[in-house]
Image (cartoon, rainbow, N blue to C red; front, side, top):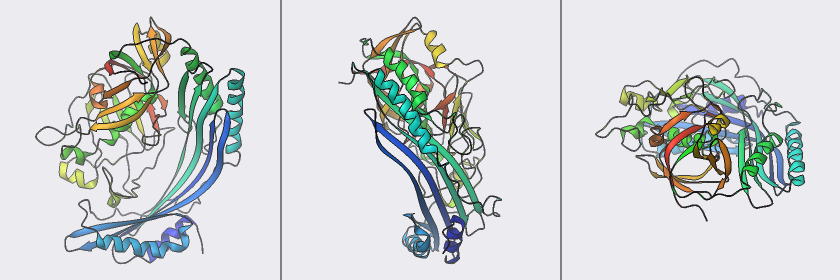
Length: 467
């Protein structure tokens, strides 16, 4: 029995009943390396297959959906998965987002096999780590972190005729360090951001050795400790911090939530804030499946329904979308259902995010050099929602708050707690830096394919330092 993703999908469709069916087959090829205290603690190169079956069932009250997913080697179990998904659909209430599945012909790449990482990718990661650890040991530093490279081949087949395939390279390097005096710092990078190459093993992708040089600079900044009182400060947020905050903003940008008054993009009394200016700065936030270096699936892949996503939209084509244009809210994440309610275009969620300002933006180093007095914040941690209607978040700075005076970093301050809304924060942005690939510190919850600028923000409230 063939285990090729296309054959698995076709067998599942062949045993489906009279209602509609979606089959999604993901084949992931992943290499990873984890280390702590200058020693490797885990390493591996694994392949995983996941099959997701979405079945629909029509009833007196409407159409319902049932979803069944399985990892491992589910090729022989597809009949049982389809039957289980159909039972789940018959037992489920009618779905408010129900709609006929998009139709279409098979795409030209449908018959291609899954792509694999080059065999030397793990060795390349290990070589970079050896270089970083050798340097750290000589300088009495300890390194902790994680690196991952992945190629994910996704196949989407529907009973309406769609046959779609997409290959997604992805990767990251997350690096923390501690010096002999107890100082800590962090840095990270998307490994498949600016220059990954088709193999996801491009030498230009930043790895442990490259990032350790940046980490060493940050630890050097922290050799002098300074006291900074709680209160409102001018801050320079690194691209990583901005990626974390914009990830939360993007997650809250569902049109349905705005209509229901559950998000900061809903208008008091009903409706959404589309067309309202969020900031006087020329900030543009956009997603684009063809964004160079950050390419993502050019069609909807929905393994379950949720906020801003519908299994009934599987296979819908995606186009470049400006969520914020020159400071004005211009689009929200729309399923076909929410678009029908609002009269707005269908603008599904896109799996990348780019924030940018106008021309002539400065780098983070140049922004530091132009600062009379402020705080450079390099990473955020444990961001959690407090009020979804305002998108107020509570969180911590971690491993890197530095005092800047007269264009120079003069020392490290303790970490702080803060409460801030990414939407309200946009109103207090006074400078937009140069956009670069950025890894959110909480990358499990944020968009790993992100390009963000550093931001200068006035009046950022920092409360008592962490103990």
